[in-house]
Image (cartoon, rainbow, N blue to C red; front, side, top):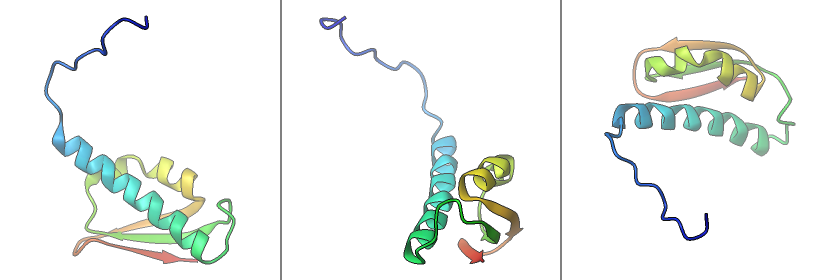
Length: 87
């Protein structure tokens, strides 16, 4: 095991999936940052966040975003990318 080389990835990287995944990380990070800056427990519930300009992947993983951030409701809007947190 220790003398084996690291396996090489052979295939194509889905750049769109990586970009979309990074947006999900950005959303969760913003919620955690908000809670930290306001001295809130990570378990403290957020009543709603409004996501503007985010990809469809956010809707597909909405359950997970809500669970990680203790968020009751997520609203989606078109427009410039923005996250509004409503406590």
